[in-house]
Image 1 (cartoon, rainbow, N blue to C red):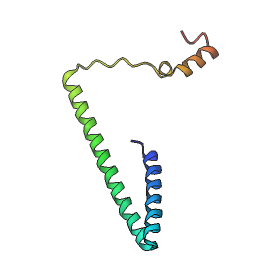
Image 2 (image 1 turned 120 degrees about the vertical axis):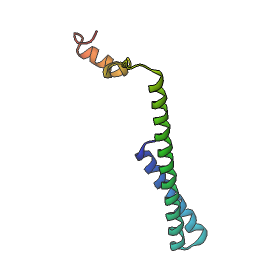
Image 3 (image 1 turned 180 degrees about the horizontal axis):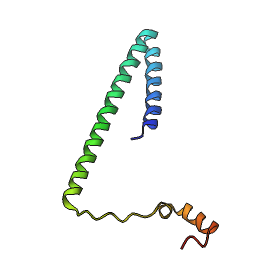
Image 4 (image 1 turned 60 degrees about the vertical axis):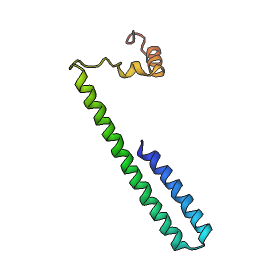
Amino acid sequence: MYFPQFLVGMTATLLVVLGWTYASTGSVWESLGWTFLAGVALQAGYFVAVLWLVHGETRVTDEAKAGTTSAPAELPGPFERDGIIHALLARLFPTLMP
């Protein structure tokens, strides 16, 4: 859950709520009030979702620690993960790349 993506979605949602409420009621103050309440609800939901994700991550980490040894994981290097970068570096520097 990326914050910039959430921020764009929240802004779009609040603009829709603002426009819809203003079109329904014709009152600027009432539409601002409902938009404020929608913003509070969205922030509370985002906070709960982040807490849930963090709690789930610690639970997975605890379970992983219980069943494994202290051997490090075999991860590919940064240039081996992305095929485009690896191919570009292999063409530019053929002696460096295997």
